[in-house]
Image 1 (cartoon, rainbow, N blue to C red):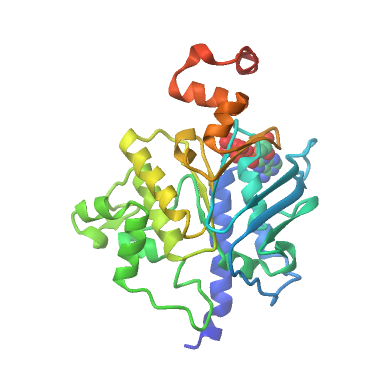
Image 2: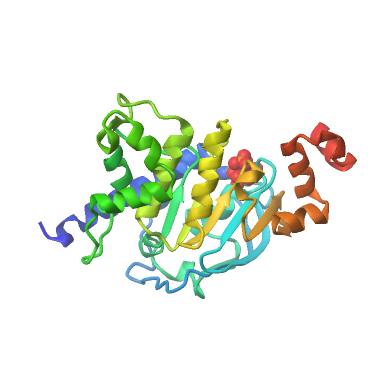
Length: 316
Ligand code: ATP
């Protein structure tokens, strides 16, 4: 069958995948309507990415029916290949910030640009070919580890010149994601069955498989939503290493719940109540002695040094 025969089916599956991931990420509302029913007014307009510079300019957004803005005047720029950490209290707007990049929602005001192109001027399909996403709780289906890594890469790549994926590519992505070692320790290695009735993998292992999947796609911009669930120290170190390894390869935005995972980020954005309230490197933010410094003190257990203002907030 020709590429064009499968193209509509691939598009459909791409939409299903997107809304599934989004539903997982927000687990609040299933947004399939957003994707399935609306024709894309930019269909056919392709995004060209040469470097992967990402820019948010005064982006504001309100969820339908919400009383308050969820994001207010968010601006930042990420250099190609840099790692941006996004941290802040729960409900601050971190996930929403990245959902706008995938155009699950459109900003009320402001613009998001990749290499200078406003993402609202290109088709969603084209935009998403350049983006990778690893959700908090990645979805593994019934199949082998290898199939789970390759999933969504070849099948959904509608380009006529889409590259074949061989085992070496899969292993390279798994190594970069810090997953190769535990995979080879499984009974049948890359051929081990996972998912419903397969080997039970920890949350951290599933996330590393999902990172390998995202890296194999070789996106220009990668969004990682760190698992909130408890992971042991070794898994945390592994995930931190894979986040560090992805940077340099592509522009990476990592939503972090454990500040230590983005300690090495080129810049960290501290989001509070829909606004970027502080920004800088880890050292700069500790020096600034604001919200980040307090969050950091809490994470390292230096509770006595936490500011009174922060404690008051925590009590409220
Ligand atoms: P967490 O760290 O808990 O994941 P977050 O910083 O990622 O939080 P968001 O998920 O972006 O925060 O949510 C920001 C605000 O928007 C919250 O008040 C949330 O309740 C609200 N919100 C999120 N998704 C929706 C939605 N689909 N419809 C309406 N409101 C939403």
